[in-house]
Image 1: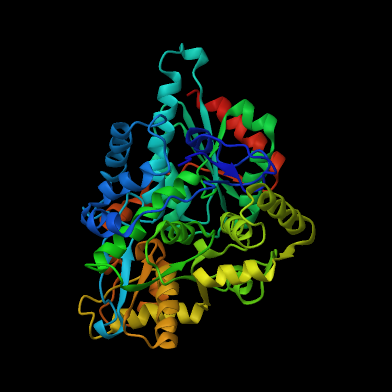
Image 2: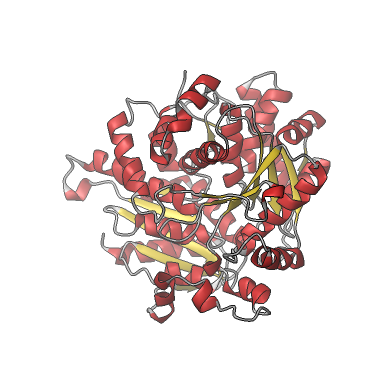
Length: 510
């Protein structure tokens, strides 16, 4: 089976290696790298072998299917995985909290925030950081200092990607990190986690604008072939395939934590912004994991919910500032990857080249006209695997309160607003399905301490509640008194950001 990768917009049969895909991030034609063949796993392997594995062992089996042994030998890959997850606070890496709203609802919460920055992004970015280091060390092993390849990592964040990328790459040899975030549109703790890292290879850029502005700038940088070649620019945003790959594991692991055998029905509900987290679930489903449905939970920035209702993908510059800011995104980058498979399977008769042509046309339309509409077969294909739900700010607050006060929850379980969006969407689907044979796994993407304003708004009405005592970990309490290192950029402009990166690189002296 081929383990090569192609671009979603390519009109050629060009195939790239895993190393190329990881180190480049975005394809030269503006597309995203994908494996054109999704590996299949038999029921026998799933339930007789994989179901008995630890998280790290399971990650190795999955990644081996996408990474050739000639690129990363199995022993090296195993070492990278062990190193990546040694930083997590839970031995299970992604533990499952069962029946958090009562056994009668079959609602389980998959906690993905036990990494160093208390967010699900750590699951992928601890691994990606070690991959970058691994490939660079191999390239530079026998080169004199003046000829060593140095990587410039550039990313945009709506809150959690930035700190996870910084914690995954800080202090890494021959790597510099630039993270763009929208000024005033992330939580205080998210900003503190990024800006209190003083390693010389790290620089945060606070950009006046929205996350979509920052994301467009990063895409513009990758579209500048001269700049990316000169500075060896690499991506940590979820446009980097390695991030999606690393996230596939917890769908399998959560299923095996929930069921003892095969044939059970499960729906995964995922708070979604850039679509990377839930896309990993799509790959798990296509590999053979028996997922009934993947439910996209959005906040008031609901481009994905609107798409599933009418088949129109339409961008807007009017980004609503919600209580779940990591989802305040109107263009979901990874959705392009899903569309490629849907096009290839439904209107292109399995033709990879034709699928690339169609995707390229659609995204040109999006760039010029701000929208495109897909074929009805593509829309039906999406609806086969996905459902969606839109959750308002008030519903988010109500859900945080409801989880906190339920009698079946004596420990007063506290969730962050993104997790609340997922749980609210889950309970809506439970009511619609009226099927107690279905188990629902709602993904918890961040620790509640990262979103003090929303959690306090929901819970400060309760006597005895204290954010300081009930929510905030000791490790995060220390951040507010540390000095910050950041650079404010007054205009969300591509050329201005490139200029800033060049100035900072000159001062880093790596």
